[in-house]
Image (cartoon, rainbow, N blue to C red; front, side, top):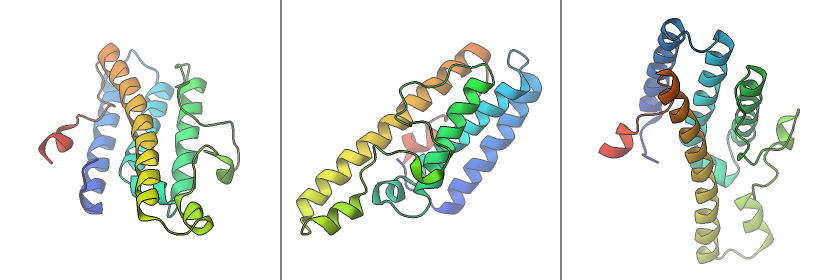
Length: 162
């Protein structure tokens, strides 16, 4: 993940939002509901990707982001698109119930004596899990883009130049 300021991430989000609206107007191989679901997934992925540290540490917006990813995946199915079955989210209606597979790294620190090597190991493992989720979503969006000529997947240019 590239580390930009929050302002840069916000600018990238606004650009993607504008591009997604343009796609919805021009690309007619998808319904408006499908465009909305894909935009929701792209936005949730962006929030997840730009807040990975907070997700790993169990602070800030973790439960909100987990819930947004779950809701976006549900929206895909409701819109007649295939949901992403590889995502580890269970059915949930309450934000706190999402993503029960995530280990809260701060909880581990409280339980055990602080061990910097163990902290780094756990942090890396959780980082890898979130990166895998990101990769799964990006691949899904790229496949949609390839099939329909849309632009929901991130280009990756920011990562390339970082």
